[in-house]
Length: 162
Image 1 (cartoon, helix red, strand yellow):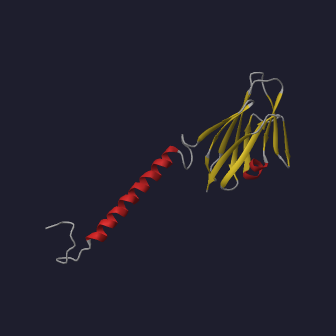
Image 2: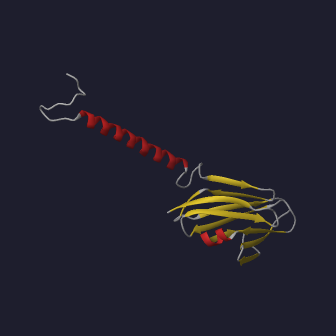
Image 3: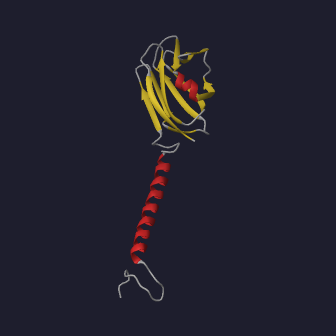
């Protein structure tokens, strides 16, 4: 007797339908496994897939591509070696989409304008590093630009999940 043939006795079976349901079940298990593996790698938050760096001549930025709206985000800015004060300018997209919680070290001056936020820091001749922690105000894609002084801006995108 063929195990995959439909039967009427003792219970009515529709093996063609049953085989389709087994296929749907296997596809579902594969999709759930893929989602779990992507989450472990950082697609939905903290992880190696999320970590990113934007490098320029005078400035480099470390950030996470994928962020959560409920989690504090960290941005690390590293200035190149130079004399005197260094300014960090963040565009209006950053100013509108993030609420700054903390900046280390504290800027000596700050200025908010229509074109964004400018923070001025005293740096050593060897360069300096600034860590900025901020809460995302909304979710979606943020196109952010940052620049040091008059250098060309570094553009990067961030996806904020709810």
